[in-house]
Length: 367
Ligand code: HPA
Image (cartoon, rainbow, N blue to C red; front, side, top):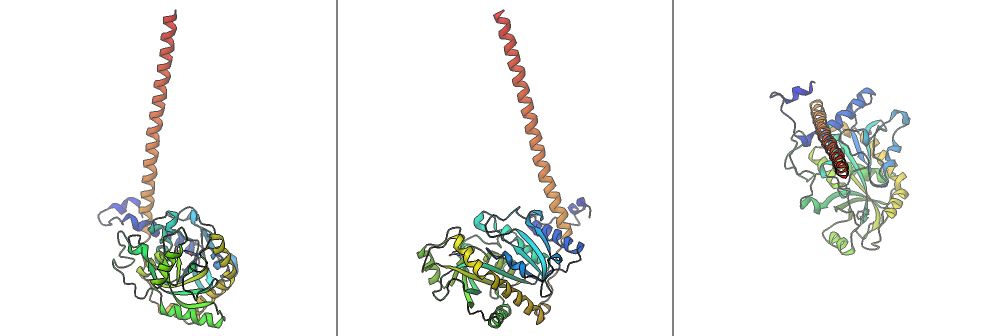
C-alpha cells in the first residue's frame, strides 16, 4: 500500500496508541509466513528466571524461530531485569504452535502500561487464543511455602484501582469493549486442566487456587503491608502479570496464570532478587515439563479447536502509518540538529571574525 494513501478521507488514520502492537505483530507475522511457520495458538509470557520454558519446546531447535526484542518494531531495545532474556521464540509444544515471550516489561522499570501489555496485544493481533503467564511471587497464605506453584483464580490490584491501569486511554474497539467484565478472567477449563496435569505428574507442591495481589514494586513489601494484603484475602503477591492478564481478558484471550512462591512475606520478610531467582531455578525444570504437559493436554483434548477464532486485526495499514510516523519524527530531529549545527557554525564564525578584528585593532593602536 502507498503510504500516502492512508491519509485519504476514505481511509481514516488509526489512533497512534493502536499502532505499536499492530506494527510489531505485522513484522512477526511476515517472519512466520516467510518461514512457513504455523501461526501460534498459545502464548506464554515467562516470569523471572523462567525463560527456559521455551527449552521444553519440541525438537529440533532448528524448527524454532527466535527474534530479539531489539529487532521488533515498537519494542524496547532490551529487558533490563536480571533473569529476563528479551526475545520471542516461536515453536511447538507437542505439536501445538506456540509463541513464547522470554522476558516481560514491568511498570516499576519505568515502562508505561501500554508497553507492559505490548506482548499481549501482539499475541491478540496474531490471533493467539490462550495465554499462559508465569511469575515469581511472595507467599502471604500461611499454607503456601517456598517452591509451591499456585494456580491463580483471582487477583487484587491496588494500582489498577487507583489509576495505574493498562486499559486506560483510548479504547481499541477492534480488540475489546471499553468496559470489560472481569468475572471469568482466569479460565476455569484451563485451571482444571492444570489441576489434572499436576495430579498426573504427582506435583504435591501444586496449589489449585489462589488470589494474586499486584503491587507496583520495586521494593519488597514490609510486614505490615504483607499483613494488609493477607487480610484482604491475598494468597501471594508480585510486581507483574495482572496488567497483562487484564489486557488479555479485554481482548478475548483465555488465561492461565501460575505463580511460584519464592519467599514467605510475613514469616521471613527477607526477600531479595537473588533468593527469588534461586527458588525459581530449583523448580524451573518441573515447571517447564508441567507447562508442556498442559499445552499437550489442550491439543489432545481438542480444547483449542472449541475456542472460536478471534477476528483478524488489520495490520498492514497500521504498519505503513507507524513507519510514516517514525520517519516524520526522525526528520524533525534531523532538521532540529541541522538548525542547531548551522547556528553553531554561524556563532563560531562571528566569534572568530570578532576576535580577529579585535586583534587587528589592538595591533594598529600599539603601532
Ligand atoms: N513481593 C513482590 N514481588 C515478589 C515477591 C514479593 O515478596 N517475591 C517475588 N516477587
